Picture 1: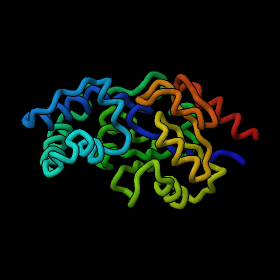
Picture 2: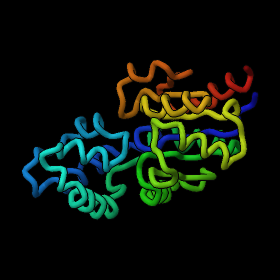
Picture 3: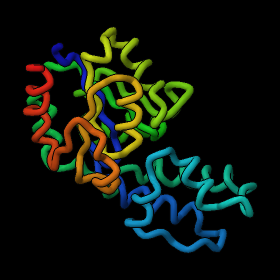
Length: 216
């Protein structure tokens, strides 16, 4: 069955957002006596959405601060969305090569931030749909966002592939019945990506993997 839809994750897959997210988190938690986060620590925690991440940072003892810290994060991050964030090597070239496929982004970042980040980097026009954590009732690793996207586009699971850097992307894709491609250069350890159909080291390898799926 020919591939008709390619679904991409955003953070750690299309764009390296690690420094800007770390800076916004450190601003958000600054007044509350928490230790500053390194970029490495930040990327080990991202993936399930910023609300969940902040909740984990605060723990039960400071849970009542979550909304306040989240508000500080969003205020800062919305202004400094791409101070340092850049697309990964090969992303622009690959999107040009596969421009005839229908393409979507499903991110656990909020929709408005996801869209604005892609617009700022000149990538938004490549995608038919850009969905975030608030686009559907559930987030990855739930398959719900993927299944809802399939309905939106009007294609079957065997006609779609999801590309991501996280086990959440692979779990969501597999549960939805779509093909899966993991990128090794993102925020998650490659050992967590072993269940993907393919693991690629650069986005520029994606078109050749699509050829394999199309030939199957």
